[in-house]
Image (tube, rainbow, N blue to C red; front, side):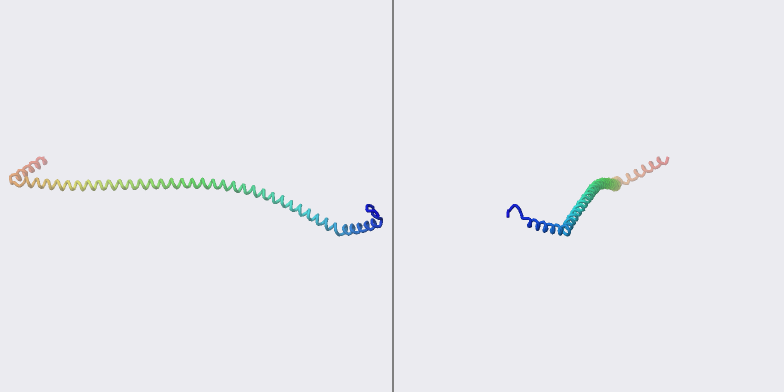
Length: 166
């Protein structure tokens, strides 16, 4: 027996056992294996298809997100412009109201100062008139102590009165 050349009986039984194993595998093994391989291939294909769809959806969502971000930036800009405009309007209105109120207060102060000035002038006039009357009274008392002077003043007044009537 040679190690490199098998005997015919051995080849015959190897051929029969190979055929038997081949038949069993062909009948029950390979369909299961090929079915599993086909299912796996189908699963991979479906997964790739789902991944492509998910990628498209992600791209769509990304573009929508970019659009939303740009819209929100535009809206933010508009809101900031409106807020700045509203702020300017409020400041302008407040300044106008403050100016009107300041003018009103100044006018009231001017009127009050005018009234106080007139009151002060009237009071000074009254005091001057009172002082003048007191001074005149003292002068007249000094002048009229004498009867002769009293008669001269009375005659002078009659003369002035008669000149005024004419």
